[in-house]
Image 1 (tube, rainbow, N blue to C red):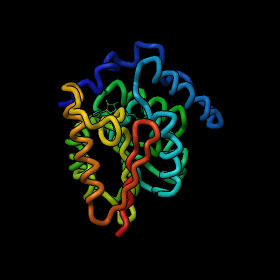
Image 2 (image 1 turned 90 degrees about the vertical axis):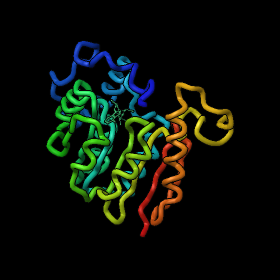
Image 3 (image 1 turned 120 degrees about the vertical axis):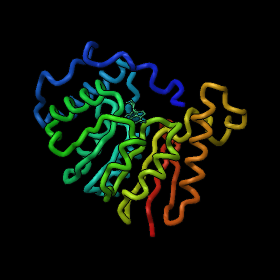
Image 4 (image 1 turned 90 degrees about the horizontal axis):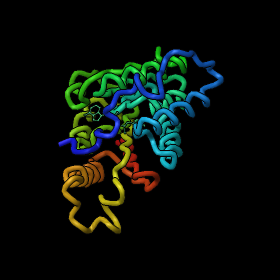
Length: 227
Ligand SMILES: C[S@@+](CC[C@H](N)C(=O)[O-])C[C@H]1O[C@@H](n2cnc3c(N)ncnc32)[C@H](O)[C@@H]1O
């Protein structure tokens, strides 16, 4: 079901080029830490928020001004740190199924001085979602793409009235919709692409939400609750 999404960075992070957590960073050096995280992600082939998609993400976080953020798919904590930097009063719960990755995230968030505002949970998001208590103003879906419809349904009871749900990679290499998506997706991507189409169908038809899909990066869907 998860296909090849996570195969590349299964080698663990602690033994690689980016051993995290040894050095504390001055809070003014947050930008330096972010650059270090970008280098770490590149070296270990960890997919973090694409540079082109960052302005859409940051603008949405600013507009939402969230107090509680939920993220599905932490990786090394890059987008979590961006979200916390952008919303100084917010707290984040972020879910990651890879324990090494979660440890790296805790370490980076600790060095950034924001670990007190972050809870990094280790496990499958679909299993942990029903255990969470609600009231999230912003949800960032960035885990297994073949699970996006489940994630959308799973987060519904957790949303505040003015929440926004952001989902990354919804246009997956142009295969989900628009020009170039007419061909039946090749086998290795089929489930993913069909589930992303289903995600877009769900969010666009959801009562009380307005959705905009931005093409930047690999496509980002922003669904504002607007009841
Ligand atoms: C694209 S990366 C997240 C990037 C991160 N949001 C960022 O921009 O810095 C996706 C992450 O989701 C995790 N993941 C995939 N499926 C998951 C699931 N079902 N539950 C929890 N984590 C999952 C992967 O291990 C991977 O670290």
